[in-house]
Image (cartoon, rainbow, N blue to C red; front, side, top):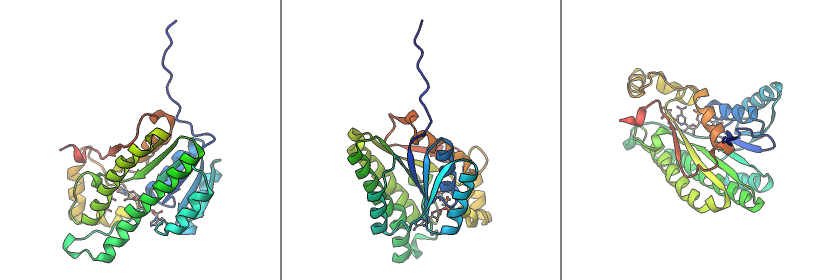
Length: 254
Ligand SMILES: NC(=O)C1=CN([C@@H]2O[C@H](COP(=O)(O)OP(=O)(O)OC[C@H]3O[C@@H](n4cnc5c(N)ncnc54)[C@H](O)[C@@H]3O)[C@@H](O)[C@H]2O)C=CC1
Ligand SMILES: O=C(O)C(=O)C[C@H](O)C(=O)CO
């Protein structure tokens, strides 16, 4: 009889995952996806109330989760966490946008956006990889980057700079950590309906721009991102590292 190939498993049973920005939007969706696949999910964000609500809802649904209050820009707190806990999967969805014309960007805007989107993402990655390598186990690190890590966007110079930076960072880290089976990738969404994008959707000029650019004719929902994150977290993507999964409805196709 012919031996047929077997579909790789998407199960995360027995694994521990850290999801940052888990109290809201895409991060919350990632926490659900990983918990439904069987992982114990440590849900991190700054504010405790929304975080506790998310964890309570996950537990009510029969999943394994805990809440962790963390300001990710605080590298000392981040370093302590990553030294104390071992994670098989890290999903970084904490992110900040301060949109406006490049000519009006202040150094304070730049530092706030880059401090979270790039600096904290950089050290979250190195702290996570260090622990994974020390444990001698494979691991998967996933950053929620953006289509704005591949193209430019009006009023988005700082945001685009940080997301393009994230894309380069991930490629370089993938080269260094591949031999240890620590994989690192990005997911690059188009506009997704979350609290972050509400003000953009409320602006008729920007809303028209978005509708025109997304070839599939609709904005994204958090559910559009969850499958990609589960894929990159699981063994199904065992040969995938240093790459970027665009979920952009065709935005970057032309
Ligand atoms: N919504 C969208 O259209 C898109 C979002 N993205 C990216 O996805 C990620 C998540 O965005 P959304 O879910 O839309 O935003 P959101 O505003 O709903 O969630 C952001 C999360 O980050 C957390 N956060 C913010 N600052 C933090 C800090 N200093 N320390 C710890 N946590 C902090 C918040 O508590 C919140 O849980 C961001 O990196 C964003 O750039 C990328 C492409 C499209
Ligand atoms: O908030 C906005 O407006 C954005 O630019 C949203 C995103 O975070 C994004 O990356 C869309 O491509």
